[in-house]
Length: 166
Image (cartoon, rainbow, N blue to C red; front, side, top):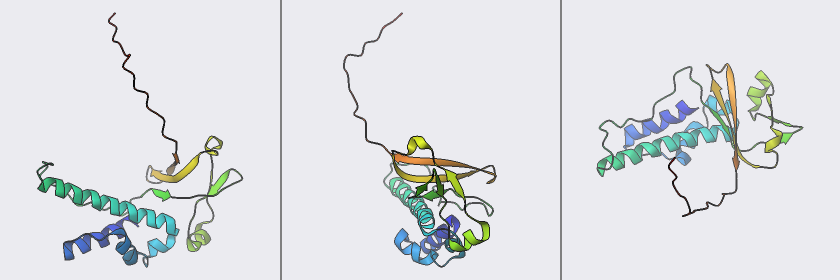
């Protein structure tokens, strides 16, 4: 899905010389077979990563034109390898009996079945922002990251620090 979104943004950039925003890119990509295999939230999060990548590219171009960035070669975001894997970013989950189901489309679920991942009990009271499933070792193993929102901790500034020399 990442390559599909990247392709449509790159082609628009080459044809029009302008940036194709996420909202417009979504309409180009939603009919793709990869979009249909993924659950809608996950596919949209992937397209948002494409959007952030291109915003970063355009910010570098702007900084370079202003003379604030000195590297001569600024490259467009690159495609994943043909058999490459991209992290799944799941913005919301439902925990049931200590597990959560990986959201997927009906077609994918019918073909491969349901995937359940145990949810850590220590995170039950935290406000969960998103879950990232990161493929490792050519997708033979997966790493699961639980992203939570924590209350900001107050920073205590102290002028009482002293240096001691032994």
